[in-house]
Figure 1 (cartoon, rainbow, N blue to C red):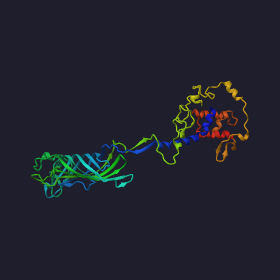
Figure 2 (tube, rainbow, N blue to C red):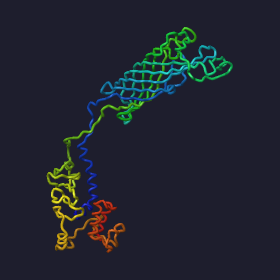
Figure 3 (tube, rainbow, N blue to C red):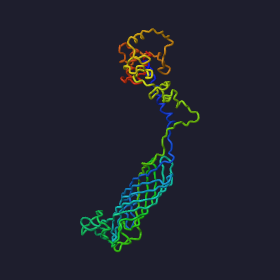
Figure 4 (cartoon, rainbow, N blue to C red):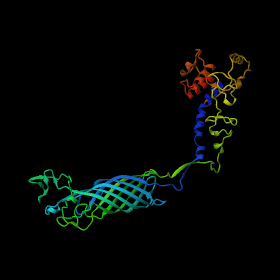
Length: 443
């Protein structure tokens, strides 16, 4: 048992190299990543935000497509073809549009509004394919569809002091006091019926044209930057319509607004485009080294990582192919006649604990001497053997092993250190045991 542990200490570094090599090679043959021929694609969720700009009889409060009132857009799309050129989209938009006009000569043209909008839309989209075939793929798209819009338009006519009066000098007054608008849209346009309109609908339909770019982040995530134009079938969003019968009368063009937005599309539910399969038989060609997948003793552990390559058939083995040894006496279970030996007991080749008399008889058994030229030496460095090195004294970290203080590490002291290492009762590392072994044979 002790000799067995000594040999294990001597080759422990080599075992590390063998194990790391065995981790590759054959596993790459057994497991292979392949494309799924017809993956199942589920609806993809898009969440984003943007800005809305109004176009109608009044002025737009904002300048440019990148400025406007904030909005939230939620989209759900489904691919319609295998090449993913066509999509069907359903979306929800929540936001606000605003506008105003100011006139120094015509009192009826001093008007403002703000309208909260909520829309549900459907459209069909076409993607033009990837224009940049790298890790980051860019795909332009266009879409056309329709939506249903509900709106609630209000105007800012007064503050806490009273109703605004617009003067030709550009001032706004309440009574004789000059004020500024508080931008609190307190008056419902439909409810007041300012221009004898009568019939006023708070909802409408719209045609929506959309265009933009999709930036592929990963197989399941894409970033969309786009802008859409919403042409409504209503002229009532701003309260100024050609149907008004008095006061401010608008033109015969319907109201419109644009949405410039950024959204993140996340595919949470579709089947993966690739999957890992386990090959029952490795498909290999050419000059293949079949030792990579060989299992000579048939114990289920490939030769590359089998520490005991000649295990008898039918014997249970551990993860490195060695027969199980439950009592750790160095004798495997299948030949161990005493499978519950005491810890650190000295056993014979059949795992049976030896008596003190038998051990004493073995110690005094005469064995033939070994000629000097037959002494086994081991390499401890490049061009250097254990018998070539002389030590003046025991290295500092091994001095505590010299129990009898004779400035010499005896064989028993060496074995005791190895026993403690394998019993996890030692501060030494595998490299330390390797060095101690070299020192023992060199002293």
